[in-house]
Image (cartoon, rainbow, N blue to C red; front, side):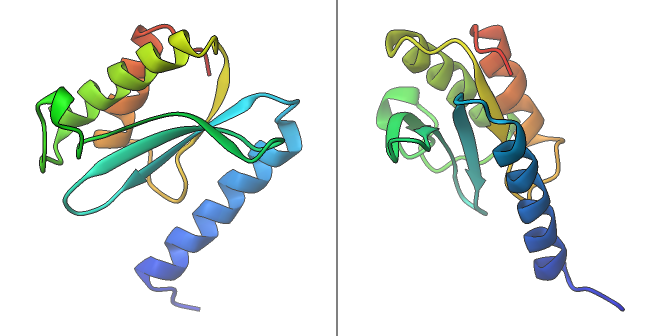
Length: 119
């Protein structure tokens, strides 16, 4: 049963989402999306269906427009932590989707933790 990369990604994404749903206890979800050119993150309240805060490399304020590297991911992580504090959020769940937890995703998570988010 050889699975291709896309099928493995979708399998990982479902596994991560199901674990988060089972243990969420009303906390917000920090959802990460990484494309080949950009990285973006949203702080989502699933109960209300609302995005509380968001950050992306597409924002000119961060100074990393069009970059998709570890440094850019760290800046996005710091930005989302700052915006979450402004929104009054301290704890959330980290939803990496189907992405493996290393490289850019890990740098984003570490920067968000350093910024004060707990997950």
